[in-house]
Length: 469
Image (cartoon, rainbow, N blue to C red; front, side):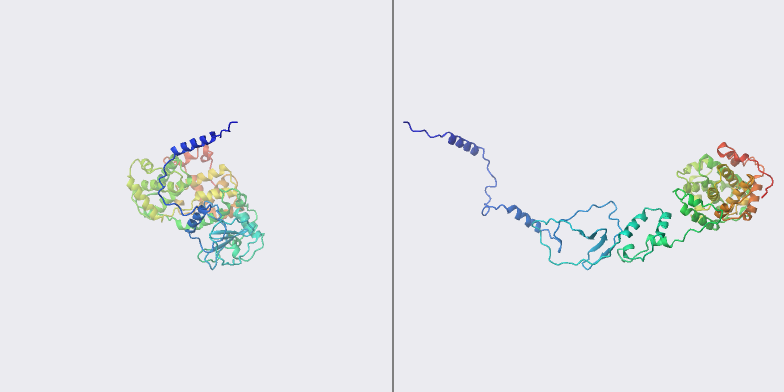
């Protein structure tokens, strides 16, 4: 029997593979490095990493927890939390449902923590948290709800809530002093209640409380302030002190200014303010005749920059003067006028008073336009230059009611204007005699303006020769 032949096929194949591997073996350039002492353990990488991490010094007493990254809004953390300082120099503030310490966030509720492996053990010193004032949920709800209310509704809402003493939880605390400041709610409690209106007076401001453009909560105070400021802009008769200026020259200048206002499509407040600036300047500075038009043009330029959204250019005002003046002269006159008025352009105007009276009395648009016609004609009359604008507006409205067959001064008009009928008697007759005069050929701009259909052709309304009231 022949002996079995050993199977060498698999061995031959392994030898061939080993030969191939030895052929493609790449020389290791680091083979000359001394070998590591002993076989590296499986935890070698972890131990090396821990050594590197220990190089970064951690704050003493740091809690053993993962650092929570808090989202920061664009304007920071805007809260009403109260900040207090403790002995270790860290700030602690109270917020709803949690205690916030600078550098870490500790929740009052139980939160699952995951310990950090191989981290530096914190110190065993325990710092007792100070007792903090507890913010009542009812107070927080009231404060957040009042912030969303309008001022008038907020005042009514706060009156229904029983007053409590001002404690730390209801006050704002400064970081430097730590003293409580006066809160908005405490100021609202000190505001006096709105006075009760007399009988027969319609509360226009209460009706317009929902209109943000009417600013009804401030309107009454604004016009009271306007009336108080009228004495600061009192104009005396000045023609006698101006040897080169006459009444007719002033009327021609204002007629030209009305034409400029129409050409540039300016607001009526701009025209009234410009006329006021001219009279204020002429009442305090003696001028020559050749600069009168420059004063009028510069006054319009100043008023435009104060009242208009897009005022015309300087070159436009030089053009309407037929290039009689240079740019440097107009700018120099602008500085002079502003110095004379003390850079105070918040001048009470009869046009604004009239708008207020007409709105409160609910005057129709045609009667309001006719009153504006009378008021604009009064700009050219020098005899009316020393009258108060509030009285002038009230008298013009009363004259309109007389001409329209309603010679009454209602309690509403009396309340909002502050004038009774007998207070306006003299001014009404002055305005009546003014509009009864025949129109002059060179002073027809205002009449032509209010003879248009846009203004209800009020300049064509017949004026009675005598007034009965």
